[in-house]
Length: 459
Length: 105
Image 1: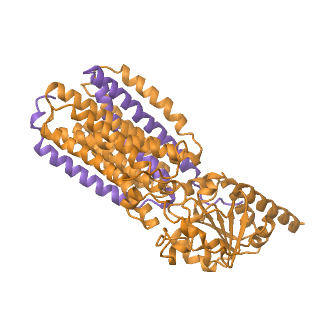
Image 2: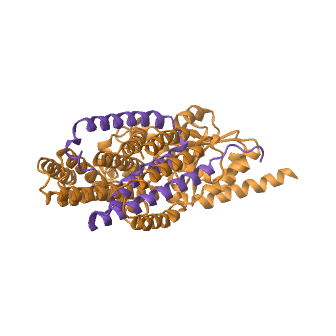
Image 3: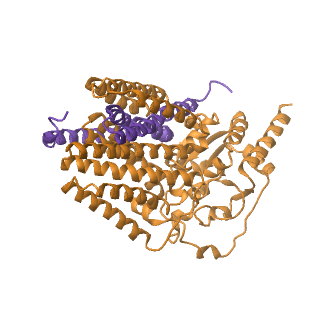
């Protein structure tokens, strides 16, 4: 059994290593599956397992639930991910609870074990409800706007403090079992309260953070069960989630505490009343003309592209332009979309080769030499106010410098400010033309206009 | 299994902490090398891997010590297996979509 665990731990590390490049990434998945298989096989040989009936039922149920969950449309991947963090947290919480009751029965509760169980249950159950809330917000079953009430942070932190204090008491006196359901209840409640004040735009960070918690709850389970494989795999997951959260926070120039306790989106209501600057708008035909005469085009996609399901239309425009020898790149802001890397997956689904997907820092160098920037459903990530307007809530956030290109075309439904409620001065800039309409329809028209001309040129 | 339970605290705690520290370190190193392109598949893959919690769940569900622990363990196995199955499948599905520039269009 230990041999299979050792093998599994090694395979997991290789799995993540191979994932670093698209070329070897699928080998990474195979290694992960092999590692998991080895671990499960090793566990089933364990002499303490007396009945396989329930395990078989649970495996069947899990498989039946897992297959449809793996077939969701890629726009729904963030929800699915949040949901799977919830399952991970739930499993940890339940195992912790089961172990507590077992050890309570046979006197096996040492302070160390109780402490580990406390951490496992706290992290597990708060990840469970927190991730359910996040999934609900992403699926828009729950309002995506931050839900706030007075003294929110004070109440949340008090609840957490009570839960930790109860845990500490339980460590000192492990058989005082009524404390245990109290910890469970508080963790579940805290998970809900922690996530409801967080707005949709902060979801990439929150998902990463919950990813980290889910991993850490698996680590705690490893400490409870004295299982080093669990500790290893959980630590890999925990560090991955942590790194992603740091990247997300840095990409928004915000700190963890600001994301968790800041409730973005309630500030900056007054500033919108400033003077209205003229907006220039254009038609799809105009846009097609400009694009056709460019030599370098950069597309900046945002969450709006995912909402409008416009990734395949973008591809049509991309095809038309590359056919003419025009260099087309996609500028991907780290927080574009609803989870880390979301945009890349959506564009890859539309068959756009990954060499054309460029990170923010790399593309910013090229933007001054770019003829046309096409902004599709992105807003805050191209707002120049982030560079100079100290009163703006997004001041200091690294952005894609769309305004530095020779010309900017922005597809947007209307002039309404975006999710965060912040005015975007890019839209009123000298060299910006607005294309008002649904992203999918507008891109379709542009593609059609390009096709028409292309056919005309050919004959 | 009961013989060693009371004396388990000392040395084992330290070796577990060592494993935790080293694994976290390896995790940081490996994950920092993952291209931003693949962050969504990364998250779904680590998700599937951390569903290794299935190992603990199987033990609890299979020991069948009390009804409560068996029920809790069984639910935990189902939750973990859901993550394993959907995590690996969706990661592979996403990775299949990442293509290099085709030879010709």
